[in-house]
Image 1 (cartoon, rainbow, N blue to C red):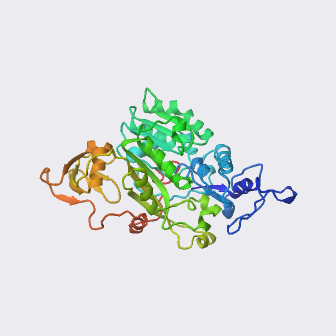
Image 2: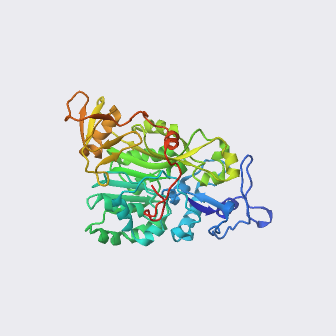
Image 3: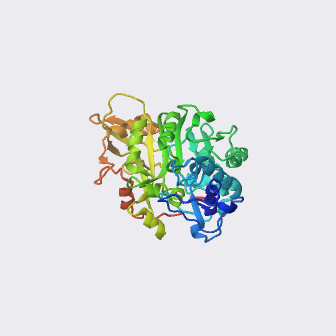
Length: 447
């Protein structure tokens, strides 16, 4: 997580609520907690001093590091700055104030920790130093089985993840990054030739676009043109979450996947949290009630959300704890598939053939299904449909229950736990729910 100096928000608010005598400041709306410490700086935006504490205002971006998310956020009430104003302020901060990731005042790791496969660590080391240093994210959102895929990164920032993905998809694949801050997009574009030469690619397989998540068509992105869409801690800060999910659905091919990490709440957030400026920037004020994700997914046409990882988020501030009350938050990764409209699905037995880079012996598909090479696993109708119609089909032998598979013991991927859909339950069952960071992941925390 990235922290913006509090005087940035004070400057934005003050620009439309001038005090008598010419001093700029804000008018505290009734029922809204307002932290106003120190004098505002309307003409200049400076990073908060180390240890500044309550003068900081946290903002998320590409994986909690791209200005795309802050720019799009707004609840349409008095407590939140107008969308255009916050967009301009955040563009200035990320485009002009921050020069490298070391300028960040904190590094909060809120995504669930998973071991980074060797091939991804190697791809990270190939990314240019400036691209990595200008990346303000908190981890990686990289699914499996990427060779030859076309991938769209929502909120790509300086392009670090795009360059990792461009190496993993290979020269016949393609990666597109979209971000709202032109200076970040320019940094990403600057090193296209560098990375293509390093990878030995004759033709560039990566493109960077300046635009907004709610209107991908405006940037020239065509419907049904991508195999995978990824996003890291972005959707929770977009006011119209359904619009972003709908856009992702539209640009995905049939059998495609939206693989994303985001922040969720254990209940519908009360107004005091939704309009709280600091919680708004800390990626908590706009968190979706976790059960609502399934409702939105069904409405748009996605399959049931598949929970992959989950980690509890802790708040170590007494005042914020008072505001939050009984609300709890979790950072969770889900995968949503877009399947073709076919006939009735059926339960199946499947065998993972191996062969997926970095997951040759075992594929942890989600929190409920783990497939070991050569082992027969019984799966439900929807899981069978996903494996049949997605990019994973080439790595599985799939037969309806009743048809004979090679002689082998049959196992249930679910074990005795049953289906887990609640990210809070998964986070609570983890052996270690505390965030862990790895030095192998340059410029951010563990995925």
